[in-house]
Length: 118
Image (cartoon, rainbow, N blue to C red; front, side, top):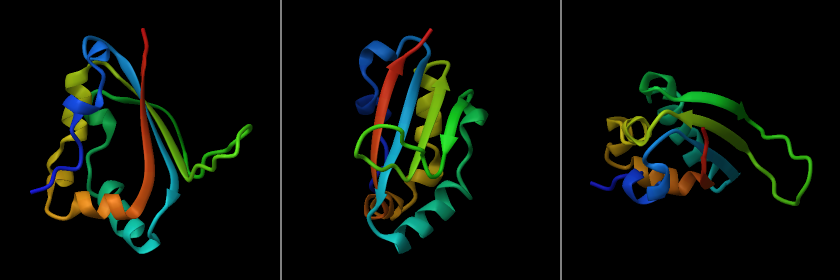
């Protein structure tokens, strides 16, 4: 079974000891049909960050750009109290279901950034 996310690899070690921010940017939709199917799972069936201790600082779909050439379909900024909370959210069973990782890869062009916070 393919796993969609690997927090142990994604999050820098320096941020695994305290609170941090995750910034998710969907730059574009690669396949609109796959995106609709993936969003039905991600938005409709997954547990939201608050259940795991995360706090959504900002979310916009579409994201509003002031400067720069890159478009963003969606942007989410989430504050996590610790790595364990992020990992629990990122590895919940719905994302490990057969085919979900492939569907996500087909659906959207995404970047994920991590920032320290106090």
